[in-house]
Image (cartoon, rainbow, N blue to C red; front, top):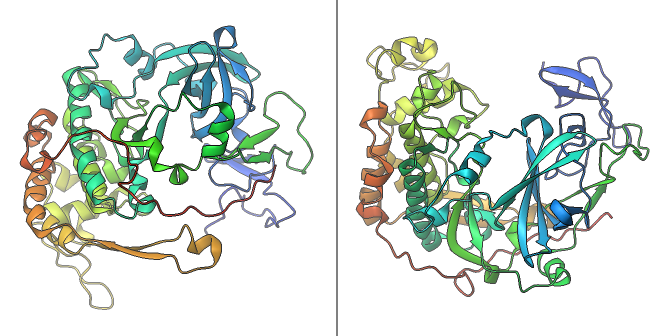
Length: 467
């Protein structure tokens, strides 16, 4: 029996006036302390607990000598919140990433990167979001690492949903991603979690904007009061008085965006000579050696790079994880790239549901249709992608905007040639980032510019502040 998220078996169904009484942590259900937020783009208030998030309010002064003033929210995740801050000493804007206490370690990957000696003028160096500084905060929930980072714009995974003509932009982005990864690998660092949502567009210099102009340009922060599970005010210092919705990056004026990218989130990064036993990269970007619990390495990043380039350029994933099952991804791999090499093939227990021992699809569903089919990257790219943008339709009652994109026929051959050299099952057969950077498909204009006048943005939905 499938249960709604956060609901325990036998518990009453929540109503709009009665919050869900349980929350799941580590596979077990515990009683909620807080009323769930109505928004899906903010952190769960249950994360404000010992070892968890640090409570932050707009206008707070943080850092040594109260150097950073909190102006707006940039985002949140399972391990941190990120805030737009004004550096009062340098008179510039920065992004401040405040880690949960449980993962705030002096030897974390981000601090290792900061402590390295880098020549950022090297090829690809400018495409890496290395921390500019750091400090520590002691709060009601523990000891928190705070990373000072450059302010960045929307994820490249959003360009197809926010730009009406993103084709040229996607071509400019692709070689930058390769060069950024090349830079890391040249310094013995593997990213470990390369994917479109960890690649952001750079913003132009916004330091000349006053705090009032920042709010005018990027929107008034929307607040959601933090309440107890019974709907009462929460008075203890462990949680903020309200949650803040992040800046809607889809609505940022193109004049503040550039066509340059920056690779972020090094929480899964590692020294290439000392790979971890496990990686937290999503299955859709996961190399086969990781799925079969073999050591990761630079070649694992190359597989993820191929998935990322495909998605950036075609507006769809090459491998879709569905419900997060490894078998779903392995099925798609074999359909696209053929039989897995040994010993992986024999160790895949469910292979017989779709394939014979030669890796040929020969099984039928109950309705007589094939359980699996062979495909090629050329076929996938040639069929294009059709979808509806619902930013207007979903919230305003319309039908959304119908969009479609198909790669030019003369481009597909070069693109597939590049991808084919990355999508090799055996890691030692995949090309390096340095070799990939020389491929003809990636030789496009690298002139940097803002997106003013180049890209028409799709209007964002109208939202209403609740506080």
